[in-house]
Every structure is written in structure tokens, then in C-alpha cells.
Length: 222
Image (cartoon, rainbow, N blue to C red; front, side):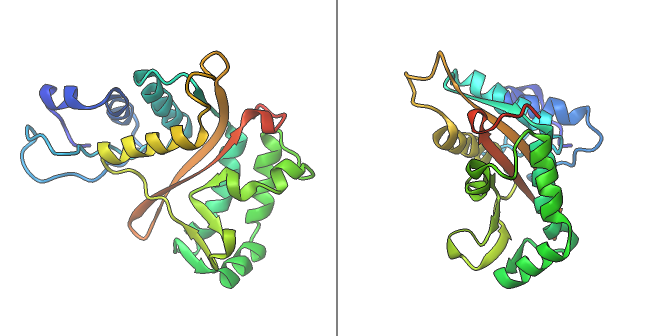
């Protein structure tokens, strides 16, 4: 992992500092992109490490929300949802590509046990395959994986892992916008989202994907 001097470290956001601290004690973490130059050089947008532990990633997001004093949105880790999204992305990992034509992607998905394992994860999280709320909206709850949603004719992974502080902050902005409640109305009753997230490497690039589901859409606490 890239080393930072005290001056550079203090210029990172609170969440990025947490990411660096977590990565330093996690042997499974790989370092993110690095800039050239000496260790004391301050990059325009500091690189951040790749963290693969879903619970640690949620800790980082929640730390950033707290740093920003955002009170209308919360993220809760769900092991079942993590297992579900891992099953979805495994098809891409096993076949060595982040993108397939829809017909080929459907064939690969049906020939494997990816869909079955996805449902196992959803059941573990407390969701029923008979629930119309879940079955009819899976594509909306799934982030970073597209199974020909809206007729794009592609099965694809389209979310690269944020490699820099600026990209991380942009992602947090997006999550607040897409999954938060209305500021000023939900501080006392924040929108709680159950999250399962995974990070994978395909063809020398790092992608992330997740299920993000409003807690009240299901009965589980997985």
C-alpha cells in the first residue's frame, strides 16, 4: 500500500483515512492506483486502496455519511444480499469478461447455478422468491450488474471500483441522491438500506456490484 506522510494523510477525508487504516491491517487488500513521485508528494486526487470485505466497505460509507452529517440515510450490511450479488457477478468472473451479448449472457447464466445461488442469498436475507416486490424489481435493486435491463442487449458489469478520493466522493454523492430520503424530513426516521456488496477483478480491472434494498421492502435481517 502507498505510504503517506502526515501532511498528506491529514488532507484526506475522514472516510479515506478509514480506508487506509483498514487496508493497512487487512492482508487481503490490494493497493489501488498510485501516482509517480516521492512519498511526500501530494497528488491532486489521492489514490485509495481496494477493500474487498463487504462489512468494512459499509463501515467506510457510514463513516463518510457521519463526517458529512448526513442523517437521512443509513446503510446496513446484509450477508445474505452479499451472497446474492456474489452469485450474480461470479458468471462474469468464471467466463473472464465484464460484458456479453444478451443471448450469450442468458445462456451462460442458465447453464450455471448462478441464478439459483442468487436466490439462496436472497432467501438467506429474508426475501421470498414469491414476493412480487422483490421479483419484479431485482434490476432496480441490483447495482453494477445489468442483465439486459431496459433492452440494452447486454449482460454487463459497469461499475469500476473508485480508484481515487475524488471518485469515492462522487460515488457517495450518487448514493445519497439515489437512496437517501428527503433532507429535512427523514432525520428522525432515516431511510435504512440493506446492502450486500462485492468487489472482483476481471481482466486487470476492479469492479464492484451490490444489492441495495430499502429495509422495508422485505422481512429479513440477513
